[in-house]
Image (cartoon, rainbow, N blue to C red):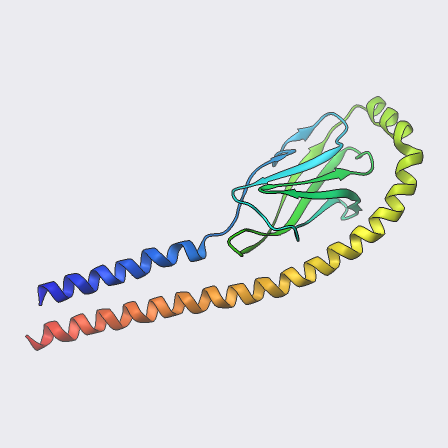
Length: 193
């Protein structure tokens, strides 16, 4: 009987530890700008580095503290790196970078980080004067297209996330049911002695 109990305990532990990777999610490793940092120079690009390779369908948005979306251009995924160009000079204040990605493991992840911009006014004015003519034309055309693409990708990711969460929950429930049945079987077998 002790052999049976030991074998049963081994099988339960095997299920418990083999299920753990199924619930692993891709997380942000680091970013530029970093969470909570203060940017003192004009920001030309944003780069997010993840713990694993991410899929091309990734979405990134930048919002000012009043909720206004700041246009991003050239969103690029390169393995575990996700970057975008900031199309207009950022005014001083708090900004939030939000993203919606799918890791190579198939798990979606949606999160955000915030940072501060505190640039001397002369640097902001120089940057605005240099890029004003180019940015106005490019931002209008690119931001509308990017907004449409981001919205469509976001809707698809929400649907995929709901399906993945259902599969993960089903697997967790199955493992728990097996564990409970095993414990009940052990208790009943010990009582019969």
